[in-house]
Every structure is written in structure tokens, then in C-alpha cells.
Amino acid sequence: MFYIFSFVRLNTKLKIAFHTNNTIQNLLKNKVQISDKYAALGVYKLTCPDCKKAYVGQTGRSFSTRFNEHKLAFRNNSHTSKFTQHLIEHTHSFGTIHDTVQILHNHKKSAHLKTLERYHINAEYANNNHLNDSHTIVPNAIFDTLLKNPLSINTPPPTTIPQTVTPPNTLTLAPCYTPATKPVLRSSRTHAQEPRTQFHQQILDTITTNCT
Image (cartoon, rainbow, N blue to C red; front, top):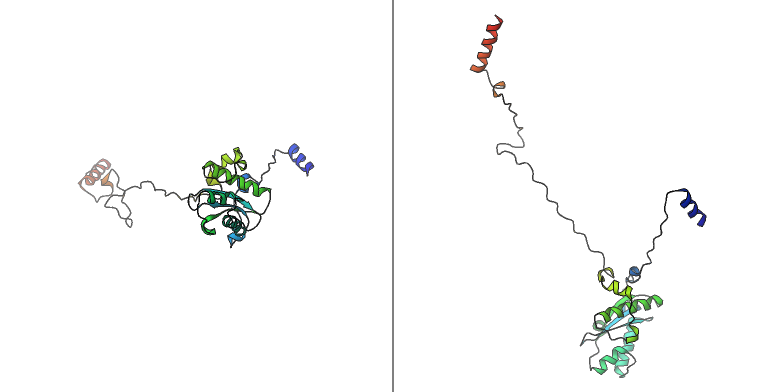
């Protein structure tokens, strides 16, 4: 393969370019759709029903299993979860899974999952709305750039609305003109198409006189 590239580069004017879809923007998009969304795994967000503060986490098990673990920690008055610790310390309520859990990304357990989690933690931190540990918040210039353009993540491209083109002004026809009738072209010498008049007779008389 290397020799082919070298031959093309040295003997032609063609330039070889490489393109990849493995970009950060594509990696941060949520592409997986599952009928039972709580049976999937990935990155999730728990929102406090009372103050709307948010906790972002990841799980290699189902979202419903992880939610029940947070719920059990709340019932046992345990601080093993930052989310339940916040609820207990501020005597806030624990909502249902539908009111509390927001699925941010469906993704299998991997290093990529950790990157997705950190991205959304940074997003909540930027809004001063996070409940995560401070050590999980690491400055990241790439995340900051993406957060300035949130439409590029999980949002389809905007629909292009066709512009209505107004036709140019057309020539206004005279009121006496109708499409079924062809306009009559008249010469500046109107007598050329009129019946024989006194003017014609004078010309004929002059010609006859000159010829005789």
C-alpha cells in the first residue's frame, strides 16, 4: 500500500487525503435508541425535585438498577452517593425514576463512557448546578469549546426552509390587449395600409402626368 501511495504522489498531480468520522463531536452524540430506555446503560443525570441541582454519573449496568441503588442509599440514610447525600443534608425529597433520571448517553462500559461522563459534569459545573465531587471536575478546553456550541451535540441539523422567490415585474399590457388577439403593428406611415384616399389619388395623378 505504501508503494502505491508513493507512486501516485511522485507520478501524478493527485493528492491523497484522509478523512475520519471518529471525531470528538461524533463520539459525544447519542446514537443508540432502545425501546426500554431504563434497561440500557451509559451516562445519566439525577435531578433533585426540590432545588433542581444535578448529579451526573455513569453505569455499566442498567439505569434502573443504578437508580434503585441511589434510592436504597437514601432509605438507609447512607452518604455513599453524592446525590442522596445532598437530599439527606437538605431534607429534600426523592422523586420517581421518570422525574429524576435523565438519560444522557447510551453506551457500553469503556473508557469512552468516562469521557462522556466528564463532559456532562463539566456542563453542569459551567451552569453552577452540579452535585458531583470537586475532584471529578477537571478543566478541559475541548469541552469548553463544545459547550459554547450546544447545538452541535445531540441535535440534528436545522431544517432549511426554501426561500420564496418573487418573480420580477412583468410587462403590463395595454387594456385593449387580450391574449387571444395579436397586436396590430402600425407603421408610422399610416396611409400605407389604409384604403385609397385623396392623398393616394394625388400621387397616382402625379405619376400618370410624368409618364405621359
